[in-house]
Picture 1: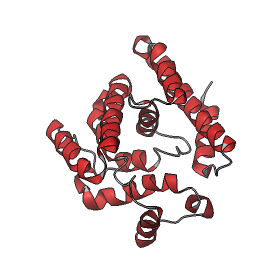
Picture 2 (picture 1 turned 30 degrees about the vertical axis):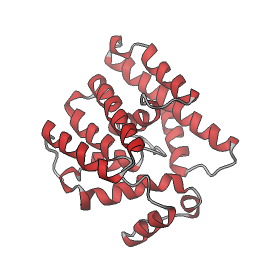
Picture 3 (picture 1 turned 90 degrees about the vertical axis):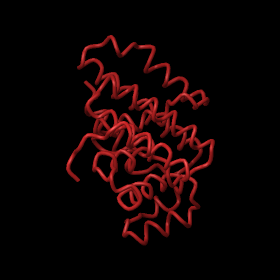
Picture 4 (picture 1 turned 180 degrees about the vertical axis):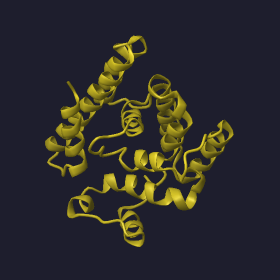
Length: 211
């Protein structure tokens, strides 16, 4: 799909449409992710703000499906899964949300939106700016009360990125996203759970990129 400007009215309409795909608690989280994504977009790429807000609104549209429903969607649409994916069902909603966007929300079938949704849980190698913003927004939105999320939220904003120059601001984003990935990996190791290969690749590429 060719890039186009997304109007405010389209965002308002999408906000109402996604409500039917989730519980009220999930919806409040989604709105908080949209708000955080908008704030980060103002700092990093205001020209893509509504695109990133759309990705935030769409990121959890399949979160409340069962593991069997996720697997059935992946099979139906030819999404290749490896054994690690199957035993880590909490990551599958990112795949299935990305799968259904072109069908259920074709006006938002933009590759940057789809990829930001696709990798918002695991991250991926050489994440784009849009992908980093959605990944971090989901981690530090204001509904998150876990200590790790609060720590990362404070780490990002206490540094006053709005007062940094462009190069410093990008470096700061990379550093905090890396800390979020590290926190995720440490938690998975502690719980003896599978770590997605995409998450490992995200960490490695961020380390290579940080000077």
